[in-house]
Image (cartoon, rainbow, N blue to C red; front, side):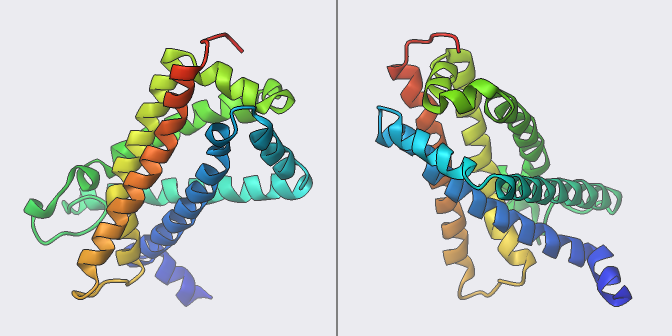
Length: 220
């Protein structure tokens, strides 16, 4: 057990765990987007209401899943902070080691900052919906009333773009941390990571834009 603990405490071990937690969070985003797109698919709001009711039907199991997701996210954030500090102290490049600065991208250079913005957005998102009892009384109506307000819509659009920037480097870096790295695959994996980032970003930003241009801007 001590050898496993020592391995996880090492820089390589932390990168492996961070990569694994990152990929699990990407999986959550895919499912979260799948459920949220019901907001657009059915303008009556019935499909989204049924989706929320389906999740709520799990009762305590949903709470356990939410706690697990929160721990997963906090673990990812903690490791990001630790690795960033370690890299700064060692005067290395941030988040992942690169042979040259010329290979740096917006995503790779802004990983820490985009992650911090995502954390701030997540807090707002939970306050807007998860911790507001009105949401569970009328899920579709509450989302429409919130996102049809220009200020809120702008925040959610910006958040979707930041998620896209974060994933444009994070997805590929996570695979690399897990050892998925081969000259024959790297180009395809890099394109896949960028495709995942673009699809998720466009998917999430389509929702606030939809309500901004179709809603009436009424207060919740």
